[in-house]
Image 1 (cartoon, rainbow, N blue to C red):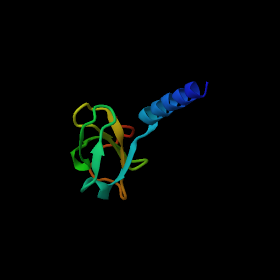
Image 2: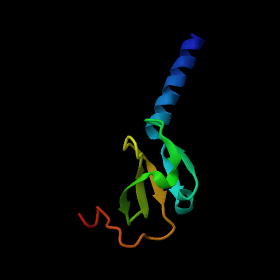
Image 3: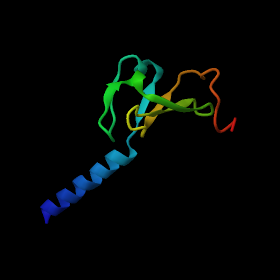
Amino acid sequence: MQFERLQSALRIRSLIKSSYMHLILEDADLDGRQIQCRHCYWHGNASELKKGDYFLLTNITELFCPTCSKYLGFIQHDFPVENEPDPLLDP
């Protein structure tokens, strides 16, 4: 009985970890931070990540894996990024 509970807890923990955790980076993290994709296990420098849409309202840019293109997280910018269209404001 206890072993089954442990297995169930580990399975739930694994699902939560793979589904809901994402990277929250700052501009300075792009210089040398090492990243590993939880989907395809690619690893490399944060500067190699694909940048997605930029959202002016929240001042973030989405980040995707350069190999499998799955969402990994976002960059929280210190200042608004100039010359980046916001898909919510400029469809």
